[in-house]
Image (cartoon, rainbow, N blue to C red; front, side):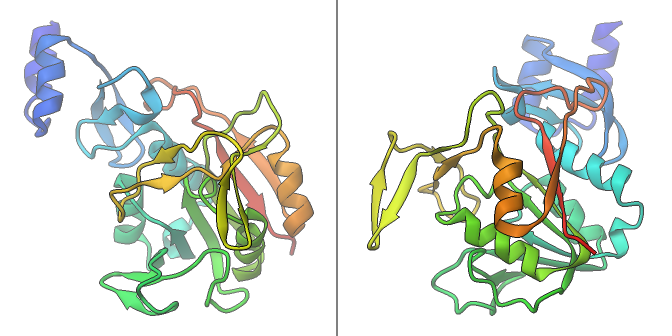
Length: 257
């Protein structure tokens, strides 16, 4: 039976790495993907599921599926909303850009004047944005705020650009068992490491993104102190949808009416 399932999966598993894992290890599980909204299989390509359990149809990761599932379950008309996504990347971002009528994606591009476009994306510093106040119904950021040098400014700017009752939907690697730790600081324009430097992947910079903050249990309190927005933590443990990975929380911060 498994050999028959594997052969059927190979019809849409176009990536050679998927094929290798299916054939040699059988390292996959069957399910339904919220991103491509189809029956699929999730290929287990590494030990850390959050970064490796990919849908073989659209390539989505667990945290991307969790963000889209949050929109589908909490924002019925999300496709009609005015949405800003900071630093878009991956299958969830592609879906937002493709299906949302009023979508704006931005990247931190210091070589492009703020507020201007390079290709499809707008140049923005999330700490000092050029958008008007109250411009968006929804702001989305996926694994961005661990890299923002002054997150209090970034969260405040998100709040400023949201309409009353607007929402920030975001992910960060969340260390909920400990307080927030600052790994990197800036003093007089000089970067100083409080903890050994750590980098994550960056879709527009091969050198990666330096981790500034290791967010912990007090993050919702910090956001409320900086912005007045209250933050709900959504936790997912749904194997059928490939959302049973560590660090798979989605955070929903709402601006007051």
